Image (cartoon, rainbow, N blue to C red; front, side):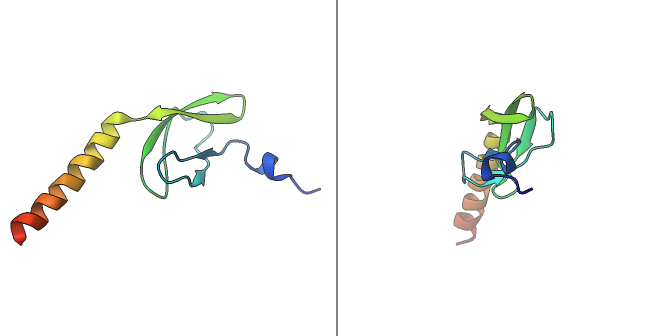
Length: 77
């Protein structure tokens, strides 16, 4: 018996940054998108996962790395 598309998506979330679907580990309170690396707080209702909000500390670290990369390019030019 084949699963319906909706059943296949149970436990998956869609990254709010790049919109790629991924499956966080069951019961995890945080999960990072395997495509873009953004980290999200996850809540669970049974086996259904839901993104609650971004992990701002991770976001701030990523933005700082991007800014350092831009600064390095400007300094080297």
